Structure formats: C-alpha cells, structure tokens
Image (cartoon, rainbow, N blue to C red; front, side, top):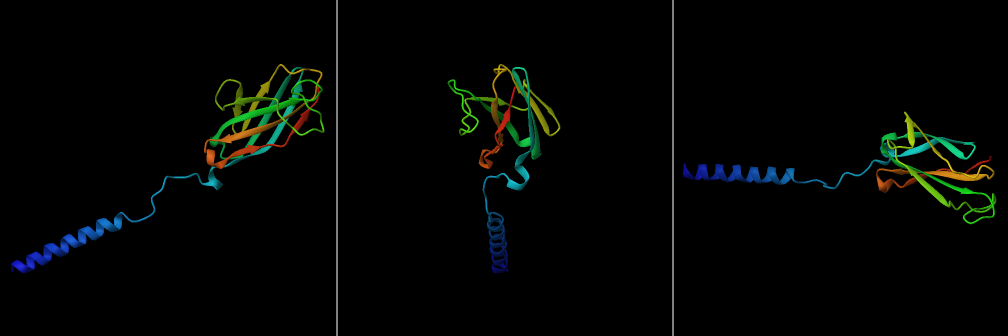
Length: 150
C-alpha cells in the first residue's frame, strides 16, 4: 500500500511540474505598435495667407489619436539669409511645432488648424507639414511642399 501512495504522489508531482513548465512556454516580448492600426497619413493640407499670417488646415486619415505633434516648416523665397528661390531645393529655415490639445492649435475631429504670423506680407513662402507619431518606431509623415503667395 505504501508503494501505491508513493507512486501516486510521484505521478501527481510530475504532472504538476509538467503543467507549470508548459504554461511558461511561448514567446514573451514587449508589445509593439501594429503598423496598420497605429499609423496616420495626411488626407489634405490647405494653406492660406492673410496679410502676414499663414493659416494651415491639416486633415488626418487613420489613427488620429496617435498624432504626437505637427511641425510647420517654412521658408521665404527671396535673396536674404535663410531664404530660397522657388526652383531651389526646399530647406526650411523656420520650424514651429504644434501639439494637439495645446495652445495655438485647434482640432475638429480629424482636422487640425494652426497659424503662423509675422511673415513678410510681400514675399512668397514655401511650407510643408511633418507629423510625428507617438510610436517613434513608425517614423514621421512628411507632406509635399506647398507655396503660398501674398
């Protein structure tokens, strides 16, 4: 009888060790963003000059909640320092960052609106928008370069 109870205890212990070992198997890694669910893109960008101000409206497609910030990058066309010509490569001399929910940016669902004032009312400006995702691994979204005239 004693040997039966020993075998029963041994088998029970072996079963428990096996179950605990099996539950520890599997791939363990940090959660990572799912590209198709976590990215966003620019649906449309419109810019309008009003005197010395540039008002920009950016409509977002995709994961709007993942927009960390939007950067307005612009450059005046002319001959002065930091200025370029309409046919030169775009090199933004000025960058201004707008964070959703902060002062200076308004949002209406998937559209963000912000403005930059203090521009020379007699010069044309080239600009683009760069959007940063809260997940740095997904990179940035860069718009085309647009031109606004006085």
